[in-house]
Amino acid sequence: MALPVTTLLVEDSGAGLAAGGWRYTQRQLYYATCARAETTPSDAASNGEIGLGVLLILIGLILIGIKVLFALFVTLGVALILTGILGRMRKPKLSGRLLALSFDEFRSRFGALELDGLIAPDAAPAVEAAAAGASITIATDTPETAAMIEANAERAELGPVEVVVASDAWRPRSATRVILVHDASPRGCALVQDLRDQGVDVVDGGLRPRDVDGPLQQVIEGAPARLPRDLSGLLERAEIDWLLSGRRVELATLPPEVAMDRVRAAISQVEPVHDGAPQPAR
Image (cartoon, rainbow, N blue to C red):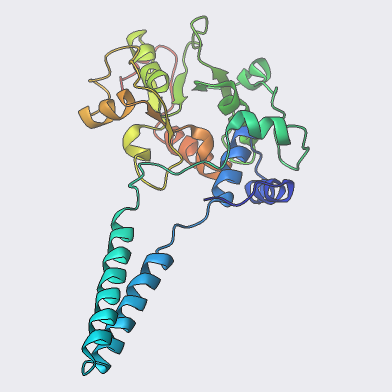
């Protein structure tokens, strides 16, 4: 079950994301709204059946001298207790959280909203301006993630960084270290290995399956997937199976301050680079 997704709920979710001066993408707003729309599963009905069953048995014991009533109340009580126990056991075991609506539906209903801190959906990182004086490049697997990082770079005190979207045509500038920020997805994880195969010194600041596998995560579950390449050198067997099952988690499930904490943690692993100095592989 979920609460109705209303404009007020979306606005409240946006206000929470923007608290502290952070900026967020439309997809982050979507996930935050879905989280606020969730209702906590309850065993109230099953507990009520068990409680009523116990009460009927107690009444039957009081009327033990009247065999017909005793048998009736005890039988009903036992039946209710069993129904309640089975009701608790029948609860589905979910590997992720149910989302209140799809992202496409969210955009069609609320895409025109203009909220404080919301990054325009068509925003793209200003690569040339960001690259000036930057010795660190932050590469992402999606334009949305890149726009979010650039919009919050000053707020997060990242210093001079270049923010780009990794693509086949992109090549890192010389004397830079690359921090890769990506989804927990086949393509995102494969990008780490792709860049390293090209001789790029990469610090993995993205999501991996082991970071997000759990019932509290907003997991997208699709058809069984095929990996774009062998990832056994990067991920554990259980993580590879997780991706093959069709599951993935987008970085946009994290609020901006949490996502930027990951970026800062990755930057803290980068040592100063000097022209001509060897770059150790990570």
